[in-house]
Length: 328
Image (cartoon, rainbow, N blue to C red):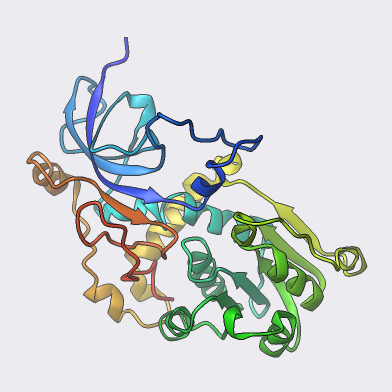
């Protein structure tokens, strides 16, 4: 018989896909049920175990609901390596948001050095990873955000070549043409609507569009691009994807992303924020020793904020941006 494992959750993730689960209807994942425990990604420490595969103090992740403690089995848990990266990373850059960015950009868009990549919601959990990987691959990167503070963060910390504040632009297509006078080769879509329409208009022939999300349409009447015929005329590739359908790439993703997080000195950019970060990496022995004792209640990490956002106090959803995968 399966042996139970008791986990004390330390951090829980707020992810954009949760909004879709609040609606009835057919989708790739079932809607939330009233009266059930809220489901979402969590990381924590084993505090008791009847299974030899897991020891007290092990760092683990699971997807079995929001709670301070979870009684689970080995098949529900993934053992985490906290020697090179902080445990919070497994809810962001090393979790589903990071994997979506990695797969969509590298396996669908396949950017080449010197190409222009446009990313919507570029300050979000997925978009900010996309932007950094694209810079790592030698691309010219344009981001779209909704505030000047986000735009400044992307320009100064990640070195994006251009950032559009769509709330300050009466004509999004015109703004994108100014930012990309030679057109765009890749559009990583997290928004849909007007952003998708502008990207189609400015795209070069044979441009690739990974379609990851439509956050701009979750709370209103969905609208499609009026220039959809241009997709044919320009031979564009638009491909929607769900990360969980491509878990065969998880091992490569984990290897590459771990290296990017753990070795910022290998890449270009400003690393000062990384060194000042409160993110700490613990070897497994130290992690076990630290979490044999009682800890504070689980904290919430809003993965709508970039990457390895740290919760600042128990049960507080942090919106500050403190670290990044490698400050490319």
